Image (cartoon, rainbow, N blue to C red; front, side):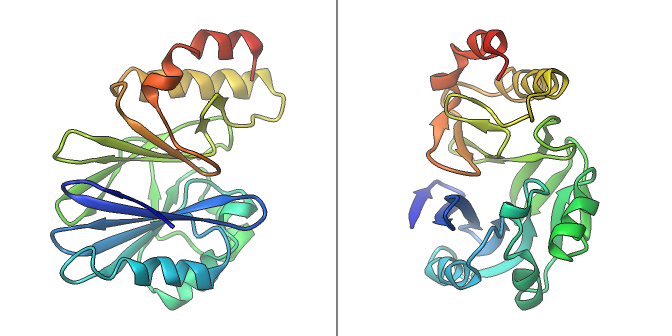
Amino acid sequence: MKELLLDDVVIRWISVSSMNNNVYLVTERASGKQLLVDAADDFSAIVELIDAAGTDGPDPRLVGIATTHQHWDHVRALAEAAKNYPVPTYAGVDDAQGISREASVRISNELAHGDVISLGDVTIEAIHLRGHTPGSIAYVIRDSSGQNVILSGDSLFPGGVGNTGSSPQRFTSLLDDVIERIFDRFGDDTLVYPGHGDATTLGAERGSLDEWRARGW
């Protein structure tokens, strides 16, 4: 288990399954309100993650479960999580039906680009990134320290954007969105936590954007 302590939030995460899916828990320090992002697999490990955050706020309690996109490997524990924690669920409007098919969970709050999830006084913005899936959402957490954190799902990784199925149209769509909606808006110190593997910063990736477009993936 790893953690990031900021002024307003604590972010904890674990890796589950043979695909090294990252499961994130965001806790607002002032209230203890928590948002789980990507109940990917191994519900017992997710419970341990939530329990480990018991001192991250005065009254720790899960108030929402968010999903970055509809692919099966990101929703394998969603049904069990939603059953045991009957809280609002969030996902992109264009992936909501796909998530329902994969996980048999109805998304109660379908997100469009620019929508926000309020975690106490902390605002988490939904950034719609089209290409990996039609409704992929990155979640942007703004901390009063000035540090921004992006939970990017499978849309942005160290070294490139997510898989777009060898489709030039999907790749162009995703890269354009990543540039316009993330790189053009946020500074180099912005932390990026993807759906698999290690974190990066926008500054570490910004100089490679032209290379990514030229190679086509």
